[in-house]
Image (cartoon, rainbow, N blue to C red; front, top):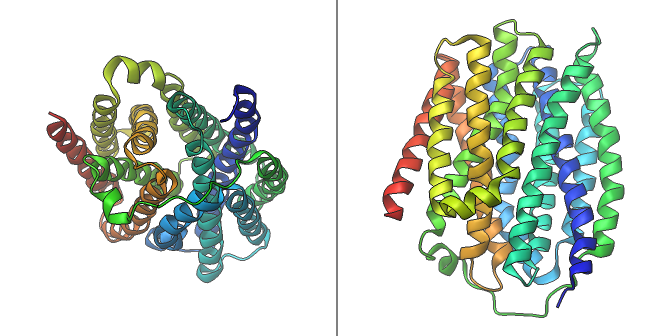
Length: 384
């Protein structure tokens, strides 16, 4: 059994890797969006890049979870760091063609997915539920702190008049190299692989009461987060909103997520995990739909603040509930299934949004917001 000291030695590299990944990947994806607009790609093509980010992980995440259940997550974390660094290195090169940026997006998506499954596997390996829930809370807070970093760097780099996408890519590449070093520390302190246990079949995991709804609700919220990150720079470019302002608004979006994740434990104890999750999913949907209205930049900032605050609760509750409901010996597989569903949403929703965006940009947020709000309302009905 792990001692408290061993848990702490694991926590430090896990939280550091989570923080860096949430700076590197959003920063690289923002750089990808600006590189694409500089290269003359249309908003619909940029949404295809978002789908490319999620395509392979949608098929491989469950297999990654199975692997981590059996062998531990340290190798996956190391490989993920290397793939993210490779994607950032490609982005540094002065190429802006569609095929090149698709390859960058695929590497970033695979790298982040490997790291997420690895981190969740390490947390799932903790024996005590109290330790697991505390680590989930810490993981989500530090991921949110990392999400603040990317828009902050965007606003700082945008002060330079030339080479915005190249400068962003260079910073992301430097951070990715540092991420490889931190992943080596995780490799050193990772849990030993578990002895063989009979793993629950995928059908048994899906049949767990309430688990599919938790996964779908959380996945739609991740899609909102992802589409906001990739599409807001496009909307800003179309409306002549300076990148510095876009960066500040995205930073506000991330900071409100950080705030709600920091108080998640108290809110969950007071309201209950299920009520907190479905109320937050509903709030996320309504705030996202409001962004389709002609509310100006300050209205968008207010809507994103509410959306971010609700997202912080909803995504954290989704991870915690998945761990709690998962069959013994299949936590990583269940989290892999959740991540596969996340990536499937991140793949399919931008494609649908691309078709909508060809008609009206604001309709992307309206349709997605209403879908998320309907899921939240349905989740409330099911929990009664």
